[in-house]
Image (cartoon, rainbow, N blue to C red; front, top):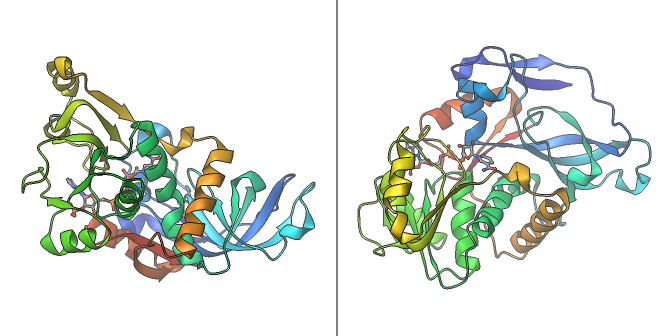
Length: 318
Ligand SMILES: NC(=O)c1ccc[n+]([C@@H]2O[C@H](COP(=O)([O-])OP(=O)(O)OC[C@H]3O[C@@H](n4cnc5c(N)ncnc54)[C@H](OP(=O)(O)O)[C@@H]3O)[C@@H](O)[C@H]2O)c1
């Protein structure tokens, strides 16, 4: 099969098309012939070497989710899976490939009306958005800020906050044009990257995709008892003295947390993803697709990400 691997950590040109042996589905697994692959800002961070502390090695195949058709089943798997259109969670990698073998516990069947491209646009970002709001103990009527809302995660998180009954959903964005597109998804206030430009005086919940040097500025925008949940670090790590900002706000009882979808139990992930796919099929949730490129052009996709040009999700097709 064809795959795209990191041959050298750094720029997008370190990504190369490689031939790998076809995976064989093991016990409890299905083989998925890939149609669409979700490209995440996190894939670019790994390719840059920014997450080296997690042990990614040369030869690493990025890609946390695919959608396609089940073409073979392993021992103990019902033959009724054969030919089914499915979405599959591939975890920390392996998705940039024309075939993947995954446990049935990582697979969600697609509703008839949902395309493979839309499925990989909503899949993992939807999990992060849903469980990040839950991690933040969000309740209807609270105000939410999604920081770094223009990407794959943010465009889903904004919609989920609106659907969950947020009183206000503010976003940060680098341009008025992106702000307008985020308003179409339900954002009520558009702020600049440092949180200027109006909006509520404070927020009950902040879902933060960015982190970086400005994180303390946003922590300071929480209402008393507010919760900031970091779900990404596209802006890099927070300053070393971030803990000082947390303690400086001691008397406002603020909470800071990280959230990784890795901690979501598989059955919960499947249930939420199936619900969100059904909502998308009914037209209640929009998959915001930036561009669809062939798998062989993964490096071009990463150049788009690095240039900050992506609004919504980039998708590769096999
Ligand atoms: N928690 C989890 O389980 C989980 C799962 C998957 C991925 N992730 C993480 O999520 C992130 C990727 O999400 P994504 O694909 O949605 O992000 P993305 O598209 O790479 O970036 C989101 C937005 O952040 C803004 N931004 C970029 N750099 C910035 C900076 N230096 N300062 C302020 N804003 C900046 C940009 O919007 P504007 O130009 O409009 O400001 C950009 O569109 C990665 O950090 C990845 O590791 C987490």
